[in-house]
Amino acid sequence: MTLADLKPTLFSRPAPIFAFIILAVLADQIIKIAVEAYLPLQQAVHVIPYLALYRTYNLGVAFSMLDHLDGWFIVTMRLCIVAFVIWLWRRTPNDRFFAHTGFALIIAGAIGNILDRFIYGHVVDYILFYTETWSFAVFNLADSFITIGAGCVILDELLQSRKKTN
Picture 1: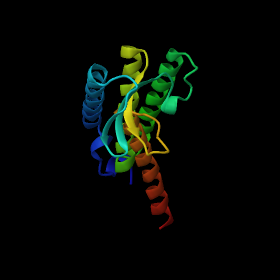
Picture 2 (picture 1 turned 90 degrees about the vertical axis):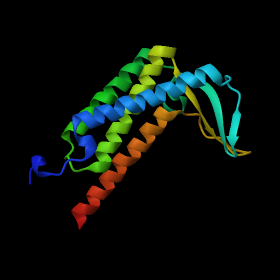
Picture 3 (picture 1 turned 180 degrees about the vertical axis):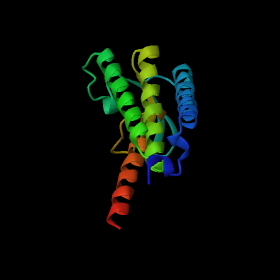
Picture 4 (picture 1 turned 45 degrees about the horizontal axis):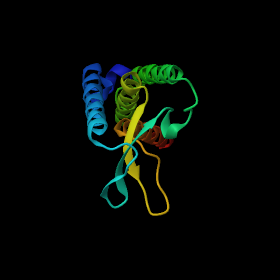
């Protein structure tokens, strides 16, 4: 069986993945525009217990790691990651639903955060989970795309390794 014989998943084809990425990036950017316009800086707006909106700026990557590095280095690093994920997407068999979905989410999230760097000079974060004694790092929709996408790729690898052992 060749790659051409496998039933392609939606995001294994260029047009659907491109359309999804555009829509996801638009959603991310529209939310960030609203956050910038209406959410006070570094003041929690409690939505429901354990969830607040909290506008802050991230100069690094996830969880503010590498915030001491030059912004253009981080943009270049993210562009390299996008290029690598596109390379992985092209090499992955067409029937691997979770992998292709994960790649689409990772690319959309990375592009959303890259655009923030160009538009604002930093990444806009605004989602905060917390308890009375603990709080999670503030993040955004693009970060969620990247995290869920990575989870999809890992799930796909686990399912593939399970198929090989059966």
